[in-house]
Length: 295
Image (cartoon, rainbow, N blue to C red; front, side):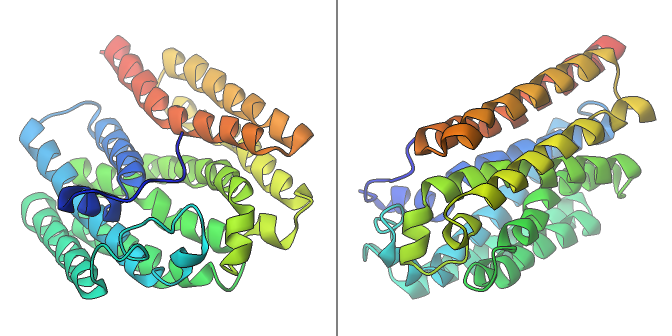
């Protein structure tokens, strides 16, 4: 998994980089997860397409605006110095225009073709990510927990797109996504702690280099994922296939963090990061299989 990217070599690659495709792919998985579970399947492929299109545009625009806001900070970090803005590949005004237009047009698609509440959630997600989370990285280590709120909202957006309302299960999915992000982003923060220190960002591994608090954050969020993951079975939305599957992958996720707790190495942090990336699509596959068996 490559954290340090080469400079973009074409205009298209510049816009892909600005859109934060890696994060975008996880956003789309989360949106699809909420959509699929909300409607217990897919009732309209056209409706799903416009849901994902609007989400793609708002998420891409938010990523670009994050690039714009962090253009000075990115110059100090090896991981980010080749991004389009610090590398001088594109002007800040062009990035700003791209970001604003993408968020607006994405929200318009969601409001006009899906429903108002889904469009509102998309705008709220962008606002919290850009206006709240991004500046907090320079202020407090709690930025990870606060930033996990907009990170978890896309699953609710998927749910509201298919149902038109925020149901109990939407909040359960939100909780699962919120907890999942902590080991994911703390793994990145551990690998990039020297970079974050150079940029004066208040990430927990920077403020406490020994890593004890970081490990506690990782493990208590992982532990909480187990009980919240079985709520869909207790509530009756999902069945036995999901129960065994989610317990298996969540325990595997937990086990993947043990080497990092023991060795505190970047190699072991990368193992945890990879486990977190695989977790969401596997969870989605388990849900699809479970709903298929139930029907």
